[in-house]
Length: 188
Image (tube, rainbow, N blue to C red; front, side):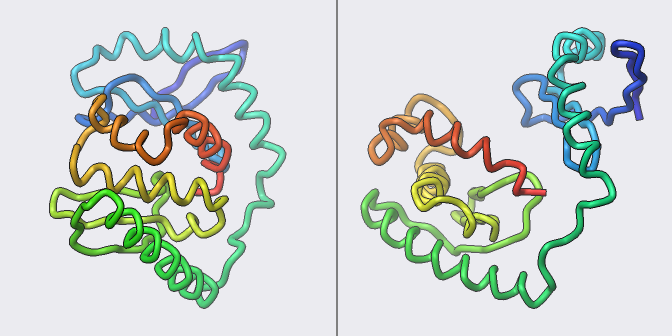
């Protein structure tokens, strides 16, 4: 656990190095956990400067989540979770079939999971994984997530070619990405 002093407050955070990260990322979760993710090849001296630049945002998020401490409880029983997972599979399967035919993409299988940090993912084997909480998103956002993951079957990156594929269905995908950010709290 790392520590930094911001405006007379000592803040503890977890530092994660990631080979997949392309830039520094700061996340504050509803349980008060703070995580800084850094690219594997970045110097650690950059982290303190980065956090200080984000100090106003960071302190406001900490303050926001503090009001909920002790009141956050699981909303669903295990039976509810299994039902939602089943419902999510039906919804996602229908969308994947539709959009994979539209794009003429082949996938291997669909999995529904309880992911903490992702709405979806695509493996190199062509397996498509989706978060069951996708079920609670607006339909247009659900469609975007499905299309996003399907396009990884053709372009396994976020290159211009990838975004051009997404834009075939969602020419204004940036707006949907913004809407999705508003729902990111629902992941935890």
